[in-house]
Every structure is written in C-alpha cells, then in structure tokens.
Image 1 (cartoon, rainbow over the protein chains, first blue to last red):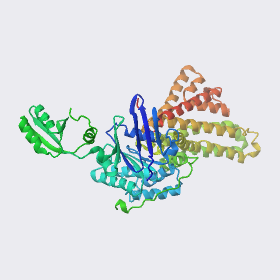
Image 2 (image 1 turned 90 degrees about the horizontal axis):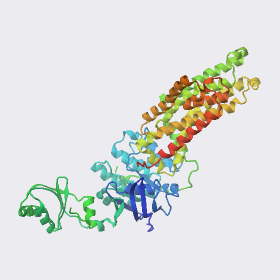
Image 3 (image 1 turned 180 degrees about the horizontal axis):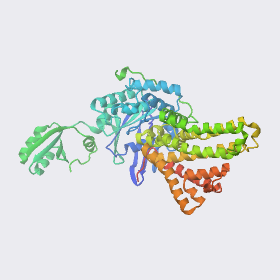
Image 4 (image 1 turned 30 degrees about the vertical axis):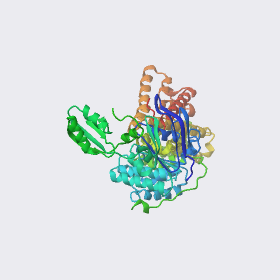
Amino acid sequence: MDEAPLVEFKDLVVSYGAVQALSGVSGAFPSGPTGLLGPNGAGKTTLLKALLGFLAPDRGMISAFGLDPTKRPLDVRRRIGYMPEVDCHLPGMTAAAFVAFAVELSGLPRDEAISRAHEVLYYVGLGEARYRTVDTYSTGMKQRVKLAQALVHDPDLLLLDEPTNGLDPAGRDEMLALIRDISERRQMSLILCSHLLRDVEHVCESVIVFNQGRVAASGRIADLTGPRRAVYDVRVKGDPTAFLTDLKDHGCEWREGEDGYRVIMSDGFGPELIFRTARESGVQVRYLRPGAETLEDVFLRALGEEVTS
Amino acid sequence: MPIYEQTYRRHEARGALRRVRFWPITREALRLILARRAFLALLVLAWLPFVARVIQVYVVTRFPEANRILPVDGRLFGDFLVQQTVFSMFVTIFGGAGLIANDLRTGAILVYLSRPLTRRDYVIGKLGVLLALNLSVTLLPGVLLYLIALALAPDQFWTWSLAWVGPAVVLYSLVVSLVMSLIALAVSSLSRSARVAGLSFFGLVFGLEVVRNILRALYHRPETALISFQASLQSLAVALFGLTNRAFTLPWTLPAAMLAAVAVGCLLVLRARVRAVEIVQ
C-alpha cells in the first residue's frame, strides 16, 4: 500500500458559528483502515465534513489525496464514498433505483450505474430486497443501503460515520464483518468514525482519538490502550472515604458513577480485593457487578489523566 | 449468503467530471412525480382549457363573424395563460413542495452533496423539475395554441397581429414558470415537511392575493397588485398581451421589478438553506 497519507490536517480550526468544533487539530490518515474515535460531540463528524468540503476551516489546512477540499471539492468528493451517521434515502425509491441514482450522481453512465447498483446490493446482503422501497426497510437494512450508496462508485476512500448506529448485536457484527471485508479483501482505504472502541478495534489497527475538539491520542490501538483491566460497578453502605483510599493504595482507580462507584482494578486483582477492603474499611458492599472498560476508561487511563475524582 | 461469497467489482475508470451534472436529479425527481396518478390527473385537467381554446380558435376561423364576439388576438392568449397560472400553482404545490423539504427530512441532501455536485447543480436540478412541470402547463399549450391558430388561419396572421404574440407567450410562460418554481423551491427549503411547505406556498400565494383584494377594495389603486405574486403576474400579462383590466394596469416595469426582486430573494433563501451542514447559531 502507498505510504503517503491519504488525508492530512494541520492546525485545523473549524467552528459552527460561535462554537469551535475543532480547535487546532493535526494528524494524518494513512492508506488502509483507520479509526476515528471519540465521544459524541468530540469533533469526528466535523472533521469528515471538512474533508468533504462542506465546512471551510477558520484556520489551518486539510488535504485529501493531496487536494484541498475547500478549493477542489468535486475532485475530492468523486474519490470519496461517504456513509453519513444520519438516515439518508430518497422517499419512494427502491434500493436498486436509489443506489443506481447515487452512482449516476458520481458521474458514471446510467447503464454502468444500474449494473453496479445490483452488484453492490448483493454484496451488502440486500440482493433479495433490492426492489423494495427504502422507506420500508428496517434500521439494519437502511444502514446497509447507506453503505451500498457510499461504496458503489468504488471510491479510493470510504468515510463511515457511526456505521453500527441502531443495530442489534447480530446486525452490528455483520456490518463490521462487511466493513472488514471491504478493507481487507477489496483493499479499500477507510476511516471508521465511531464512539465505540469495540467497533474500531474490530476493523482497524490504528486510531486517532478526538476529545472536545482536540486530538487526544493517535497511533496503534494496542499501544494506546495497553492491557485491559477488570472493572466493577460497586455500591456500598457507610462512609466510603476509607474504602476508596484503601483501593487506591492497592493500585486501583475509581470514579463516581450515577449510583455508586466504578472501580478499575489493578493488575492481578479481582473482586475479592473489593470485599476485603470493604470489610477492613467498615463498609457493606450492597451491589457489585462486573463492567466493561468504556472508551472513556481506556483512554483516560492511556492518556495518563487522573481518573479519580 | 455469507458476505465472503458475494461479489464486488472494482471500478478503475475515472473520466473527466460531467459538464451537465444536474440532469440525473431532474430526471429521477420527474420520474417519481409522474408516477403519481393524482398528479397525472392534474396535468390532464390543466390541459382542458387548451382544448376549449382550440375549439374557440377553430370556430372563429371557420365562422369569421364569430371573431367579433370571441376575437382571436393577443387577449385570447393572454387570458389563456393567466388562466393557466392557476394550474401552474397547483402543479407547483403538488410537484414542488417536497422537492427540498423531503431531502432535508430524510437526509438525502447528504447523498447529493457528498458527490461531485455543487449546491448550484443541486438547485438547478430541482429547479429543472419545476420548470419542466410548469412549462408543460404554460409554454407548451400556449405555443401549441399559437401554432394551431397560425395553421388554421395563415392568411389572417398579420390581420390578427399574431406575430408578436408568439414571443409574448414564450416570455410570459417563462416568467410564470421561473417565479413559481423559485418560490416553491425556497419555501420547500425552509421546511422538513412537504405538507408544511405545500401549505406555506399555498398560504403565501393565495394569502397575499386576499390581502391585495382587501387593499384594492380600500384604496382602489392598481399598485396594490404588486403585493401579490399572482396579481403581479397578471399585471405583466396585461402589459404584454394588451388585456383590458384596470385593476392590473401598471407600467410593465413595476411588476417585472417586483417579480425580479422575488426571484433574487428566493435565490438568497436557497443559498442559505441548501447546505450539507445545518448551522444553528
């Protein structure tokens, strides 16, 4: 694969009116699959929109394939396939007509558009349903048709904005398998934009993490996250001060949740440490449930920020 | 079928960008609109006055004495096109209300604008739909009627002073179609609901006409016509076709300037509203 980055951005500032969505971010997306990770409102979609030339930067530069999207948006867009986060379809159109129409808008002739539309709809698993109007599709099918319209003109770079939104676990796995196939077998470069670490991990090896309009981290996911640690959601009865201090002394981290505490265990320890510390601190454990490390847990820890309140 | 068994073919050819990029937008929207039977019925209804006028022209050319009662001159074409303006409005409401509103509601605007298309291409594509529909009930029957009149009475061409009517029919039809289309598109871009956009267009066009009638009743001045799109178009028709209606008799420059200002206003609205990103300040 080409080593030169497909997309580069430097000191990029983008605002929506008075609100600064991207505050001087810099980075690059190489060829192949790369994750764009961050909580909602971190600026991920804004970066994609700046890349498509929808938003002009207030400052800094952004380029795709060596082209400036603000100056040559059409040349950039014809090489990009965009799967938006929001629903997008044309009312009253069948999936086959919709996808063929999308190809035609990308500049392919009608005959070629129709043949490619059918091919891609089979590829994304909508072959049997391609003559149904998109309005009647389930959420999962709508996600697939969105992927089909982004893929159908064979772009050099695929921008996938929250592609698993609204999908059940099985649908999510199928969608991720499809995206992985596009990347691995079809050798298509893609940017997978998500707030779910698991989705990004499934497809990408490297990631750029956004938080509050800034690049919080970038690099290989394994390097950034380090080994995973056990997490427990705990509720206790009694004064928790000594309990929490003792946990911290044992190398655990904690933060307050909505109704208790989220305790991230130090390496090699399990729930028995929580029970023992509680007994020693004179508090009762009223609730304990294993949890999963969230995006926030992993990256706050990876970035060395203070997790404890 | 597992995805790994499914096919997908790379498309390597990438030619130059199309020069005419709006055409697929116009074609697909027209196809969807014309697939509605109710709309086709409306189009058929819009052509009934044309049939009546053809009969009128035929009778007058066969029985010249009828020319004194129903003269075939500029006024016939002017009256016909003013009548067609009402159909033009209904065609615009039914065909145009959802053109942009639906795209905003369903997110389809992103499908268009993430492609190698400019916002101008998008607007021209949508405008093309409404122009085609409007011209099919104004220009097409107007020109056909003119040609039929010429064919039935070529010797009376100069007598009836029909020579200038042809360009007037074309000009008036274009103005009506363009103004209606731009207003409908601008209104459609201001809402995410085709129904709300349709009602807004109806309210704007017919509501202003009601206001004009009230002002006209109070002040008895023809300038009140400038308040309403419909009346402004009628004033233009009076000037172009030599119609005699004191309520609309104005120097042609006044309604023309008013309609031009409306068109510019609509373009400004479209420029502000047709975006891939909605910016809420």
